[in-house]
Length: 116
Image (cartoon, rainbow, N blue to C red; front, side, top):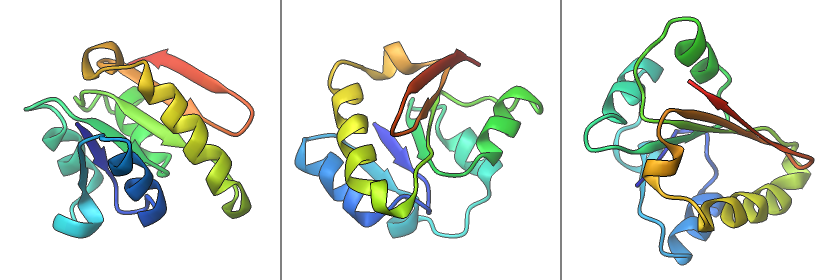
């Protein structure tokens, strides 16, 4: 399951759902939660956080807040279609298990995977 942070566009969420990804949207169902509570919610059952908020990197690497895994999207507004397609291509060959313990940054030019 993917846990989409409040800042993830509805278009990206719809694209994921159209491809049969199970997406829980904070914007739709739990608006106003803190980043820490979102990280904690990702743990059981395991959900991969999808965000545009760099603070999750700080929580994972500096504060050592437990989270299942995180995908950080970094793009300019006119690159949304590009980033959506890259995200879909990346996720098609992944599972929660392969993304567990990973912090993934996706930009229009590269994908970087780091262990948390």
